[in-house]
Length: 145
Image (cartoon, rainbow, N blue to C red; front, side, top):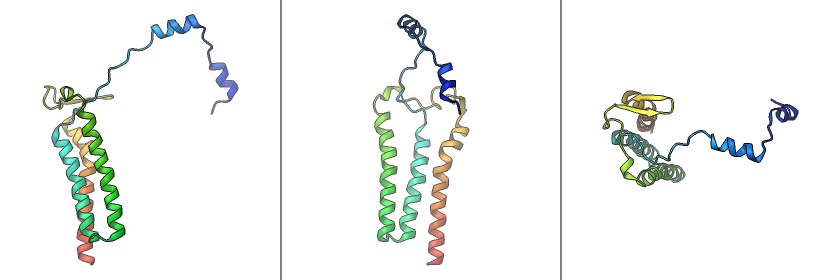
């Protein structure tokens, strides 16, 4: 960790004229993009995983009071996640272009293009596994109780 003296040695006091010169040569800024390039099947798989999980949790707990309260709160947070995304992506529907429909078949990311397989592996894997986890809990609950 740097000491205050070391930080002061690195600090640079800029005069007003120099500041204007720095601002003129600032890095270009990217325009705001409200689009998602995920195709509908990715959103459907994610929603399906969460719906499966919550349905299995309700079935496994038989709708018990405290458990049901926790499940409903979790469902509300999940609804906020998908609802917020829906609202934000609806701001400018012209910019929504799934990566599998504009020719390249690649999703452009900050670190480079990703194929549909890579996107599915990173984005869809967790919700799908969460759905399978819910099914496993439901089966265990059915066997034990």
